[in-house]
Image (cartoon, rainbow, N blue to C red; front, side):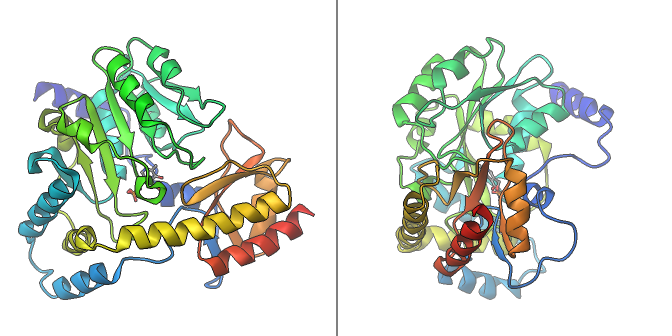
Length: 365
Ligand code: PLP
C-alpha cells in the first residue's frame, strides 16, 4: 500500500546501509570483549539455553536436512497449524518467523513513527527501543514498580499519541512478572489507536498464564513467541507472532522470504513434545533456586527472578565486575543504564553456575 511504501521509503531515506537493530546475541556481543572466547568459557550472558533443542527437534532436523534443497512451504504451514492448535487460535492468527526479533522490530516499524511514541519498561529489553530510535520515534521508558512489574498505569498515561506499548512478561532483564490483570487493564485503558506488544519469550520458563486467549478474543495485542529460550533453539531460529490477521498484516510486509525448514520442522516437533516444557522448567528452576540461595546466603542484593536470568547488585559500576568475571573466563550479561550497579546473569547448567559462584565470590571479595 501507499502507506507501507511511504514508510519503507522513509526508512531507506534514514540511510540504513546496515540496519542498526540488535537481537540478544548481537547485544551480548556488544558487551563481549573483542577476540576469541575460549571453548571452555562459561557463557551466561545471552539468556540462551545450554540444553539445546530437545531430542524430538534434533530428530526432525536430521530427518529433513537431506530435503533442504526445496523450499518445503508445507513445513511452515504445519508449524503454523500446530502452533495454532497449541495456542487455541485459528491458523491465520499465527505468523511464523525465524525467531522473535524480526516481528519485534517489524511491529515497531509498523506501529510507531516520529509522531507515535514507543512506550517500554525501564529496565527492559532494548531491541524495540533501538528500532524505534532508528526511525525517529520517541522512546518513553517507564520505571518498573517496587515489585518489579510493568507500571501499567504509568505506561498507559505516558503519551496519548503512543503507537506501541511493549510489555515483556516475564521481563528481560529482571526475570519478574507483571500480573495478568495488569495486562488486561492495560489493554482496556491504553491510548486510542495504540497496540500492545506482549513479548512472552520467557513465559514457559516462569510457568505463568499466557495471554493467547486475549488474541483469540480479537483484542488489540500481538504476542511474540520464540523457540530460543525454553526450547533451546536460539541458533536454529524459530518463532511466531500471534494476533488478529489485520494486525499481523501490518507487520508482515517489512520482511519476506521462506522460513528455514530445519527450524520449522524442529519447532513443530518441539510443540508436539509432551515433556520438553515441564522438564526444562524444572531444570532451569532448580538451578535458579540454587544460585539465588547462594546469593541470599552471601547477602547479595538480587531481584527475585522466575526466569532464566537474574540481576544482582554488585555495589559498583557493573562493567567492572563484568570485566573481572571475564578474566575468570565467566561471561555474564550486560548493565542497564537505569540500574548501573546491577549486572544480569543468565542461568546456565549447574556446573556452569558452580564456576560462576566461585568466580563471583573471588571478584566481589
Ligand atoms: N524478546 C526478548 C525479551 C528477548 O530476550 C529476546 C532475545 O533474547 C528476543 C525477543 C529475541 O530473540 P529471538 O530472535 O532469538 O527469538
